Length: 236
Image 1 (spheres, rainbow, N blue to C red):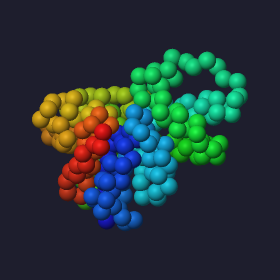
Image 2 (cartoon, one colour):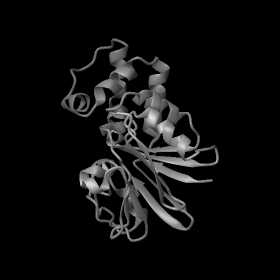
Image 3 (cartoon, rainbow, N blue to C red):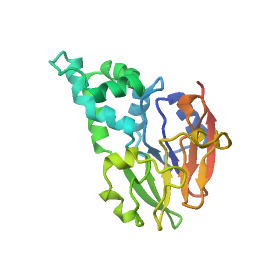
Image 4 (cartoon, rainbow, N blue to C red):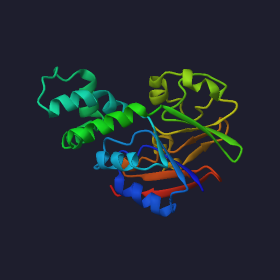
């Protein structure tokens, strides 16, 4: 049994399946997905539905997942030709500047029960997860803590907005009793030397695992038992 973490899949369904094959993922393993399953990539909804169907996969909210969650009712009304308010600024921001348009098109092509299943699933997710693997404690959040806290027990008190947006840079872990795992910012943003690799920022004990697959780089995966990284090049 092994425990894995990936993040920022962004509709890269094919690379995701390749990664599962590479790590020989099986029913006894568990995968945590650290936010941003959807948007930008080509198969966001198919990927999301696949993950929803797996009992041994746990998703953590990212900012893109929150957009779909928060606008699901609006999109369902739109799909069923019910009167809707004009698109608000936040919806246009998601759709026009953050890769939401293709996700919206795919969502509108679903049946009503499928739409409601996705809405219910996203509403069930938390913006954090904490766990212990081989006596080592990990805290998984999408972007960062957004707060200078020392104890992982206080993470539930941090706002969802901070956890999905609160990028703290490379050394983003203020916790004294837990290793932090984040996505949100692709590793290549921090320098070419980090391209296509997980960053372990040791002074703050932070793993950055967003490989920027949807931007033509790589999908990254971290195995917690031995902190080994796995890499699948982007098909983009």
